[in-house]
Image (tube, rainbow, N blue to C red; front, side, top):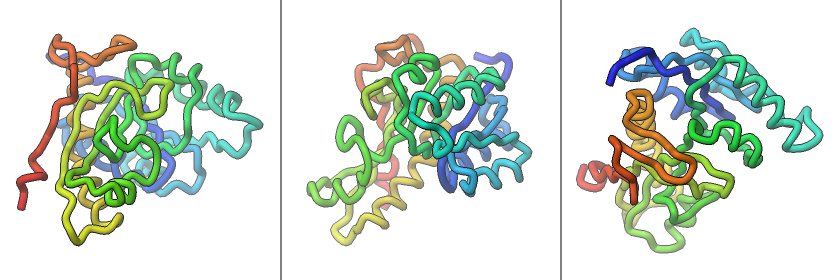
Length: 221
Protein backbone atom coordinates (compact mmCIF):
# COMPACT_ATOMS: atom_id res chain seq x y z
CA UNK A 1 0.00 0.00 0.00
CA UNK A 2 1.14 3.55 -0.60
CA UNK A 3 0.66 6.71 1.41
CA UNK A 4 2.57 9.38 3.29
CA UNK A 5 6.09 8.56 4.39
CA UNK A 6 6.18 7.05 7.87
CA UNK A 7 7.63 9.38 10.55
CA UNK A 8 10.59 7.61 12.17
CA UNK A 9 13.02 8.34 15.02
CA UNK A 10 16.16 6.21 15.43
CA UNK A 11 17.88 5.63 18.79
CA UNK A 12 21.62 4.85 18.79
CA UNK A 13 24.48 4.48 21.24
CA UNK A 14 27.55 3.79 19.11
CA UNK A 15 28.84 3.75 15.57
CA UNK A 16 25.43 3.35 13.98
CA UNK A 17 26.06 0.80 11.24
CA UNK A 18 22.44 -0.35 11.22
CA UNK A 19 21.40 3.28 11.21
CA UNK A 20 23.58 3.77 8.13
CA UNK A 21 21.80 0.91 6.35
CA UNK A 22 18.47 2.60 7.11
CA UNK A 23 19.83 5.97 5.99
CA UNK A 24 20.93 4.43 2.72
CA UNK A 25 17.45 3.12 2.00
CA UNK A 26 15.95 6.47 2.98
CA UNK A 27 18.32 8.40 0.71
CA UNK A 28 17.75 6.02 -2.20
CA UNK A 29 13.98 6.18 -1.81
CA UNK A 30 13.58 2.47 -1.17
CA UNK A 31 12.36 3.08 2.39
CA UNK A 32 9.11 5.10 2.51
CA UNK A 33 9.99 6.85 5.76
CA UNK A 34 10.27 10.42 6.98
CA UNK A 35 13.43 10.22 9.09
CA UNK A 36 12.83 12.94 11.63
CA UNK A 37 15.68 12.51 14.12
CA UNK A 38 18.52 10.37 15.41
CA UNK A 39 18.86 10.47 19.20
CA UNK A 40 21.71 9.07 21.29
CA UNK A 41 22.39 8.56 24.97
CA UNK A 42 26.10 9.13 24.30
CA UNK A 43 27.30 12.59 23.22
CA UNK A 44 30.33 11.17 21.39
CA UNK A 45 28.50 8.43 19.48
CA UNK A 46 29.93 8.33 15.92
CA UNK A 47 26.40 7.74 14.62
CA UNK A 48 25.50 11.35 15.40
CA UNK A 49 28.07 12.73 12.96
CA UNK A 50 26.94 10.29 10.29
CA UNK A 51 23.32 11.36 10.71
CA UNK A 52 24.21 15.04 10.59
CA UNK A 53 26.20 14.49 7.40
CA UNK A 54 23.03 13.06 5.86
CA UNK A 55 21.02 16.07 6.96
CA UNK A 56 19.11 14.30 9.74
CA UNK A 57 18.45 16.29 12.94
CA UNK A 58 20.17 14.83 16.01
CA UNK A 59 19.82 15.12 19.77
CA UNK A 60 21.53 13.75 22.86
CA UNK A 61 19.94 12.62 26.10
CA UNK A 62 22.98 11.65 28.17
CA UNK A 63 21.97 8.90 30.59
CA UNK A 64 24.79 9.87 32.96
CA UNK A 65 23.01 13.12 33.78
CA UNK A 66 19.97 11.42 35.33
CA UNK A 67 19.58 9.97 38.80
CA UNK A 68 17.80 6.82 37.69
CA UNK A 69 16.49 4.95 34.69
CA UNK A 70 12.97 6.33 35.05
CA UNK A 71 14.19 9.95 34.94
CA UNK A 72 16.32 9.23 31.89
CA UNK A 73 13.48 7.47 30.09
CA UNK A 74 11.09 10.35 30.82
CA UNK A 75 13.48 12.84 29.23
CA UNK A 76 14.16 10.48 26.32
CA UNK A 77 10.41 10.15 25.68
CA UNK A 78 10.08 13.93 25.65
CA UNK A 79 12.92 14.21 23.11
CA UNK A 80 11.37 11.55 20.88
CA UNK A 81 7.84 12.88 21.09
CA UNK A 82 8.89 16.30 19.82
CA UNK A 83 9.19 14.56 16.44
CA UNK A 84 5.84 12.69 16.58
CA UNK A 85 7.17 9.36 15.24
CA UNK A 86 4.93 6.54 14.09
CA UNK A 87 7.86 4.14 14.60
CA UNK A 88 10.82 4.22 17.00
CA UNK A 89 13.79 2.19 15.78
CA UNK A 90 16.44 0.89 18.18
CA UNK A 91 19.69 0.63 16.21
CA UNK A 92 22.37 -0.39 18.66
CA UNK A 93 20.77 1.49 21.53
CA UNK A 94 22.52 0.04 24.57
CA UNK A 95 20.10 0.90 27.35
CA UNK A 96 17.53 -1.31 29.05
CA UNK A 97 14.25 0.59 28.79
CA UNK A 98 11.61 0.81 31.50
CA UNK A 99 8.19 -0.76 31.19
CA UNK A 100 6.64 2.74 31.13
CA UNK A 101 8.79 3.72 28.15
CA UNK A 102 7.91 0.54 26.27
CA UNK A 103 4.20 0.97 27.04
CA UNK A 104 4.34 4.53 25.71
CA UNK A 105 5.49 3.18 22.32
CA UNK A 106 3.65 -0.11 22.70
CA UNK A 107 3.01 -0.99 19.05
CA UNK A 108 5.69 1.12 17.39
CA UNK A 109 9.02 0.12 18.97
CA UNK A 110 11.30 -2.22 17.05
CA UNK A 111 14.77 -3.65 17.60
CA UNK A 112 17.34 -5.90 15.98
CA UNK A 113 19.23 -8.45 18.06
CA UNK A 114 22.34 -10.43 17.02
CA UNK A 115 21.05 -13.95 17.58
CA UNK A 116 18.29 -16.26 16.42
CA UNK A 117 15.82 -15.37 19.15
CA UNK A 118 14.59 -16.83 21.43
CA UNK A 119 18.10 -18.32 21.56
CA UNK A 120 20.80 -16.17 23.17
CA UNK A 121 19.03 -13.08 24.46
CA UNK A 122 21.24 -10.44 26.06
CA UNK A 123 24.87 -9.59 25.36
CA UNK A 124 27.95 -11.34 23.93
CA UNK A 125 25.88 -13.51 21.63
CA UNK A 126 28.63 -14.40 19.15
CA UNK A 127 31.01 -15.83 21.75
CA UNK A 128 28.10 -17.65 23.41
CA UNK A 129 27.04 -19.18 20.08
CA UNK A 130 30.55 -20.50 19.54
CA UNK A 131 30.84 -21.82 23.09
CA UNK A 132 27.52 -23.63 22.73
CA UNK A 133 28.65 -25.29 19.50
CA UNK A 134 25.91 -23.79 17.33
CA UNK A 135 26.13 -24.54 13.62
CA UNK A 136 23.91 -21.59 12.71
CA UNK A 137 23.75 -18.09 14.09
CA UNK A 138 22.15 -14.88 12.90
CA UNK A 139 20.03 -11.84 13.68
CA UNK A 140 16.39 -11.19 14.54
CA UNK A 141 14.18 -8.15 14.07
CA UNK A 142 11.56 -8.07 16.80
CA UNK A 143 9.03 -5.82 18.46
CA UNK A 144 10.03 -4.64 21.92
CA UNK A 145 8.23 -5.74 25.09
CA UNK A 146 9.25 -5.30 28.74
CA UNK A 147 10.95 -8.71 28.88
CA UNK A 148 14.45 -8.32 27.43
CA UNK A 149 14.71 -9.53 23.81
CA UNK A 150 11.44 -11.44 24.23
CA UNK A 151 9.08 -9.49 21.99
CA UNK A 152 7.62 -11.31 18.98
CA UNK A 153 10.23 -11.91 16.27
CA UNK A 154 9.41 -10.69 12.78
CA UNK A 155 12.32 -11.48 10.50
CA UNK A 156 15.51 -13.50 10.89
CA UNK A 157 18.65 -13.98 8.84
CA UNK A 158 20.73 -17.08 9.38
CA UNK A 159 24.44 -17.56 8.75
CA UNK A 160 26.64 -20.63 9.03
CA UNK A 161 29.06 -20.96 11.92
CA UNK A 162 32.35 -22.01 10.37
CA UNK A 163 34.99 -24.21 12.03
CA UNK A 164 37.57 -21.40 11.97
CA UNK A 165 35.23 -18.69 13.29
CA UNK A 166 36.00 -16.55 16.28
CA UNK A 167 33.62 -14.04 17.83
CA UNK A 168 34.85 -11.24 15.57
CA UNK A 169 34.50 -13.07 12.25
CA UNK A 170 31.08 -14.41 13.24
CA UNK A 171 29.96 -10.95 14.36
CA UNK A 172 30.98 -9.44 11.02
CA UNK A 173 29.01 -12.06 9.09
CA UNK A 174 25.92 -11.48 11.23
CA UNK A 175 26.21 -7.70 11.00
CA UNK A 176 26.15 -7.82 7.21
CA UNK A 177 22.82 -9.63 7.44
CA UNK A 178 21.47 -7.15 9.98
CA UNK A 179 22.04 -4.44 7.39
CA UNK A 180 19.92 -6.42 4.92
CA UNK A 181 16.96 -7.40 7.08
CA UNK A 182 16.41 -4.38 9.32
CA UNK A 183 15.50 -2.01 6.46
CA UNK A 184 13.26 -4.73 5.02
CA UNK A 185 11.25 -5.07 8.24
CA UNK A 186 10.98 -1.28 8.56
CA UNK A 187 9.73 -1.14 4.97
CA UNK A 188 7.02 -3.69 5.79
CA UNK A 189 5.92 -1.56 8.72
CA UNK A 190 5.97 1.64 6.68
CA UNK A 191 3.88 -0.03 3.97
CA UNK A 192 1.28 -1.09 6.51
CA UNK A 193 2.08 -4.77 6.01
CA UNK A 194 3.54 -5.33 9.47
CA UNK A 195 1.89 -4.51 12.78
CA UNK A 196 1.99 -5.41 16.45
CA UNK A 197 -1.15 -5.70 18.57
CA UNK A 198 0.67 -5.63 21.90
CA UNK A 199 0.95 -9.40 22.03
CA UNK A 200 1.42 -10.74 18.51
CA UNK A 201 3.05 -9.61 15.29
CA UNK A 202 1.04 -9.71 12.06
CA UNK A 203 2.31 -9.64 8.47
CA UNK A 204 -0.07 -9.11 5.54
CA UNK A 205 -2.99 -9.81 7.85
CA UNK A 206 -1.61 -13.16 8.98
CA UNK A 207 -0.50 -13.94 12.53
CA UNK A 208 3.25 -14.56 12.64
CA UNK A 209 3.52 -17.75 14.66
CA UNK A 210 7.24 -17.66 13.91
CA UNK A 211 9.48 -15.17 12.13
CA UNK A 212 10.04 -14.99 8.42
CA UNK A 213 13.43 -16.61 7.86
CA UNK A 214 15.99 -15.40 5.32
CA UNK A 215 18.50 -18.18 4.68
CA UNK A 216 20.30 -16.57 1.73
CA UNK A 217 23.56 -16.23 3.67
CA UNK A 218 23.52 -19.93 4.59
CA UNK A 219 23.88 -20.83 0.92
CA UNK A 220 26.10 -17.98 -0.22
CA UNK A 221 29.32 -19.99 -0.34
